[in-house]
Length: 180
Image (cartoon, rainbow, N blue to C red; front, side, top):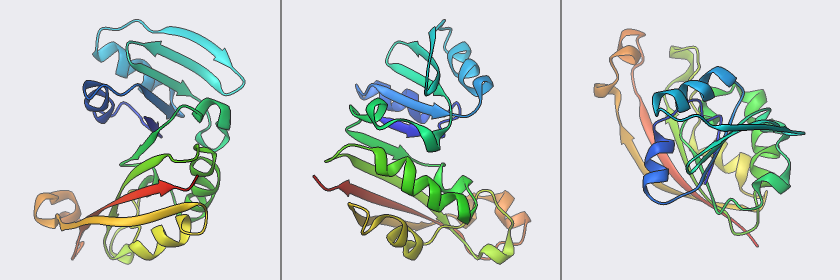
């Protein structure tokens, strides 16, 4: 399972508990070392053209540029989980992210993409609002099919957004399937 811009997300722990091998990609060595330290693990470390690899248990976390990860490194990824990467990026970088990282994933890969939707003019990101039309524009026609699985109003559960004056906030979950 590939997790781009993974940080030290607890989602990677859950994915490993579901028997997935996790390949996380992160810019910050600090987030990666904190992830392993918090689990009491001393990862094996080596470098490649892609960056620095930290490996322990079911996790391989790469400190490197998510936009430049070679397709060969992603070749075994049957799935991709993006809960916070796309929404962390400004619009200009979202286009690059979809055209690089996602385009290098192998045929028949499946993805789960979680976005936030809110009136962007009410809050400066990140996280940024990414609506369904943008998800469709970024992925449909690039060998991915997109299906909205769920949209849920979450404003009542997000006091920080309320405090910033955001009037509406939803999370949307999409399933993406890469063509063969």
